[in-house]
Image (cartoon, rainbow, N blue to C red; front, side, top):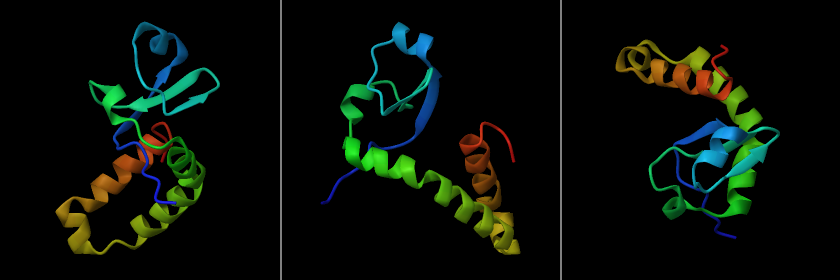
Length: 97
């Protein structure tokens, strides 16, 4: 199967905020919704199975990213890759390191 997930960036909004706008939801988790972070979310729909696989892999991806961040060399830190990795970790953890 050559499934393609909904292209990023994604963002989390509350259930109440989702009721205020007409958006394509990638996932519904308790009182939160994951949606594409772009103006026209309906045109960015991907494959629900691929989206689910990506979400399911997220915990392992976070572990790997933390491991890789610990091992980035000085040139990567100087190029800004270190800061990008830290920003992704903060997004994935709700701002927690």
